[in-house]
Amino acid sequence: MNFELTKEQAMIRDMVRDFAEKEIKPYAREVDETSTMRIESFEKMAELGLLGIPFPEEYGGSGGDTVSYAIAVEEIGRACGGTGLSYAAAVSLGAAPIYNFGTEEQKREWLVPLAKGETLGAFGLTEPNAGSDAGGTRTTAVIDGDDYVINGEKCWITNAGHARQIIVTAVTGKREDGKKIISSIIVPTNTPGVTINCNYDKMGVRGSNTCEIILQNVRVPRTNLLGDEKRGFSQFLNTLDGGRISIAALSVGIAQSAYEKALKYANEREQFGAPIAKFQAIQFKLADMAMEIELARTLVHKAAWLKDQKKPFAKEAAMAKLFASEMGFRTCNQAIQIHGGSGYMKEYDVERHLRDIKLMEIGEGTSEIQRLVISRLIGC
Ligand SMILES: Cc1cc2nc3c(=O)[nH]c(=O)nc-3n(C[C@H](O)[C@H](O)[C@H](O)COP(=O)(O)OP(=O)(O)OC[C@H]3O[C@@H](n4cnc5c(N)ncnc54)[C@H](O)[C@@H]3O)c2cc1C
Image 1 (spheres, rainbow, N blue to C red):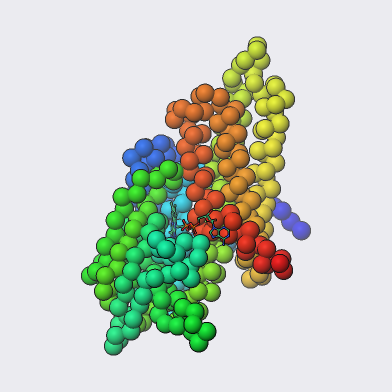
Image 2: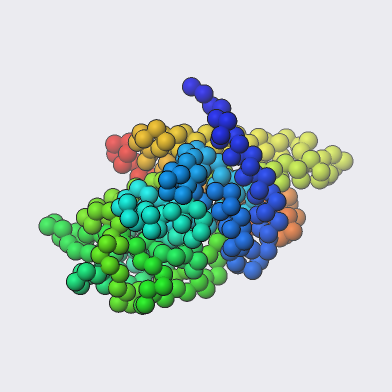
């Protein structure tokens, strides 16, 4: 067993860390305050090939592995949680399903520009009545000649306002047992009948773009069906398994940033004639943070490694996502505590980390749903 990063993985970590320090971190407060996604950051990520890390070069990617991608998400998230979320969603939700389930033509048409970072994609599963329970999907796609006609509504879709296309889940029929058949369909955002509103006032990850999508008699060719019509449900569960690794990595990045700030502050801030880092109560908080971050990162790398080895990884991805997001919340909360009143002020950034990390316990399956997934996979 070797816990060391490969030469390529270490190179990606150093390169992304350096890039994120210079090009993403300086804008983290601004994108939070203005609630805007900074497109220039994504153009620069594209130049470095970051949007195509886990995809082969023949599809415009960088030919890296999932571990390298997870490292990149962590480093970008360490610099800015909102930018990290949009990056993770662009790769794991916007592009990966096309790589995993698309036809050769779909890969050429949609994946290549995504992997090169020339365009962004989004994944629209959630609806007002279908969150944890995707079976509640009401959006429908009805065949009419050579087209699907799609009607419905999606909410809280990351990157939709900047996407060239959105992978939309929709009910396309009924199984013999009466359950809905849910399929995934690629919908170009410039198709007549697609309305995208990005007006949510979010608590955190404000540097990411989050939108409502309304689909009214949206007509797309039947060739835009992604993968098997009848297996749309298992396809998006598989997509979420992969996405969970990236949300776990993002949690580690945000937690790492909060921890570093808390450690620095604890060594600088003096009370009772000594730096507060000399008080055991503060030391133990920092020791717990360091330990939990290390544990979460190891779990993320293990899940990513299993995926790279083409071994089952759903359980480890759910565990990584659950542990890392809850660990991240504890860490960011304690980082504020160590900062005292200063931590409650925007100036020190740790309050932003707490607002950002909260989403990690909700998006791509809540903590409760992760526990359900794990319970099922351990044989309950
Ligand atoms: C900023 C942001 C970005 C997002 N980006 C995307 C995106 O790009 N694409 C997309 O499709 N969606 C996206 N989402 C939606 C996100 O995935 C959902 O919010 C999430 O899956 C939870 O669904 P819900 O909000 O409807 O909560 P609900 O399903 O209504 O859950 C409410 C509460 O009930 C609990 N609960 C529900 N069912 C059970 C159960 N069976 N057992 C125990 N507890 C249960 C939940 O854990 C939660 O605590 C995003 C959300 C946000 C906030």
